[in-house]
Image 1 (cartoon, rainbow, N blue to C red):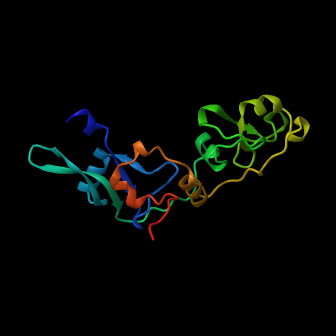
Image 2 (tube, one colour):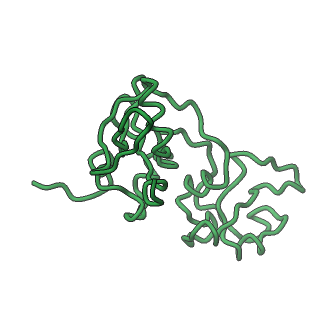
Image 3 (tube, rainbow, N blue to C red):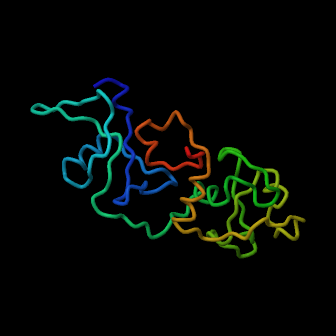
Length: 188
């Protein structure tokens, strides 16, 4: 197996032919997708052109898109730094500055020193400048105003936000395009 095959990934769709998740995009290694296919857990939707792998007795096409046979419902969103940034659209909730994850931090609206919890409803995305300015004060004490109150997002809300954010096109295989409905102009 050459190195280019080793790095191939497979888009995973739910039974309704939509990605299982957009945040992050539901992707498996091609090996995991092939195992799921052989175990009858998924349907093949699209394969990589002219790429096959061989076992002792058989040759298999490498799937680029698979669909789950039964619908997987996401009940809640993991409380992670990435999901907080995504909920807040990678925007400081005090000054409105947009940034990359590496340039952002998160802030306890009510500081931990004042009894604030580390939870969806008390954490916001923050630029480093405003985080240093606010320190262990409340936004009012620091002269800052929240642009939007923090909230616990639903899977649907995060998926809708993730759909609006630009994706690195180099990461997307052409067979995925029919299943990823980016905000693009439709042909009339």
